Image: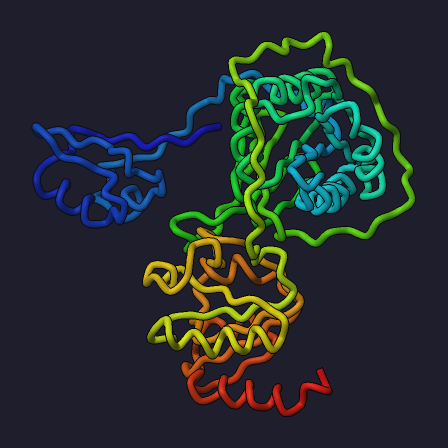
Length: 403
């Protein structure tokens, strides 16, 4: 059943229009040439029905005439094994661990989809088994040695057509964000990007949670009428599982039978110089609006150096020019999960905390006792960073032997 809002044009007049438009917070209505209509801003929230003039807008239920989906034909939670210049991207192992949790709810198996050159198939398939895959579906050939959007997507499409997985998960990386939509479009199925939580219903519907409206709302999304269900997940959102004794099987697929034509040609691969990646840091000193200048950041840098950590920032600090965007934590920056993060002068907006609440130990310093950051911290200090941080640095220097 689908719900739809309908406007009774017989009740439209200057007074009723003024009243109904006053209750809509999304600018979802437009009055033009004596006719009231919905705009693209309408969220179908129903406020105009409940709080607007009686009978002006009504809610009707329409029959869903789409073909019924037979969910019993779709089984397993699959993870696409992304490969970069360093080998398997670590987000793959995090997703395999989460896939095990999801699959256990519906007593299903965990699949890994491996697309690579022949020289790496054994090494990479063994890793997938060690991190919990029940079955590894391998597409290997010399033409698949380097990433190619057309060829790789056809391999994944072939896997889905033959295996019928209930769910396919991708890393929320530059590669994953480009590959997943192409596959989803091929099957006309749902895809939720940058999920921060995943769950599984007993009827096999995937619960996909992601920030919406600038991070002010956490949207819960399901795709009850399409399969496979697809989602991309950022690195460091889920915990990496422990390695285990391999127990699954490797299934060789036949990419030679697939269309390997492509207008894309790899001319050269240039490895970018290594830079500090805050996503991989074990210790982070995060700085917020309380810092008044870039010069003041030196005390945060000194604290980070003493702890063998790195400095990161919130979005306003990037916008102020204090740090490059690659050092930003949050929904529009990087997701981190260090062993220790010290938050200096950070209020704790949801956009920031969503990017670091997987940290093992969170310490916050803020002069506002009601700052939201204290709600997610393990330890909190109420005070001015300009007074506390220098004393903290001095303390560490005097007790280096204890660290």
